[in-house]
Length: 287
Image (tube, rainbow, N blue to C red):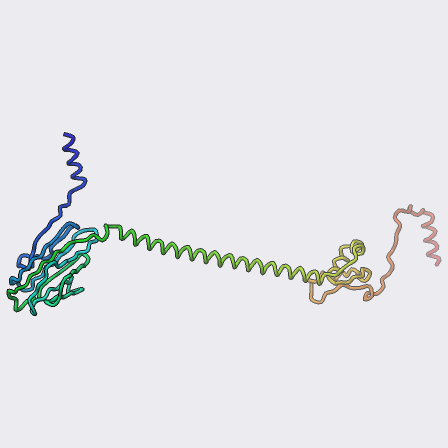
């Protein structure tokens, strides 16, 4: 019981594809057929014509019915046409890729096209008669690609091209960004070095001992004016630094009138006695 079920399951899972081998000709029943269908690479049509009279507008039209891509080929194995009225035509669609063979043509003759293949005889619609002609033609199907293989291949190529373009653009972007940052860093470093050089050139040079002996106000004035002699610098209550107003500068001793000597008081001495203060007051009144 298990064996028949196993065989039935196998048949259902892998259905058999039956190929056929058919014989057709330029006859009414075959020419009236809209499409002579083929389904796989094993299908074969044999066309036989021995010069008998055929109907007007007779043509044999073959079509491949499959999700896969096939090429239909018509190979002429016997060829003899009576001159000069009769001709054999291969084409597809509306006389697309038309090939015509007459009594002067010779073997080998083979015509291939993807999915569709048509053939007909001349004369096509008038002066059709019996002739001393013979034709033997075999139509077969050749597999070009399975369904999805061509799409996946094209998809892989397209994806590869897009990926390559993306990588190239990314590399170019990174290079441009790195070069810009490098140029900006060099510009900043160059400006810093130039500023340092300017500060070194414009900074006044002072003796170490002299510099340390000055109070902060004198050091500030000496630094901003370049005066090397600390004795020439005095405090100016109106001077607020070099940034306060244009043309501001410190005042030197030579430009200031001599001031009164400061009052000196020795607070460490004991206070005067009352009698001495009274006596000095009386002397002052007498004077």
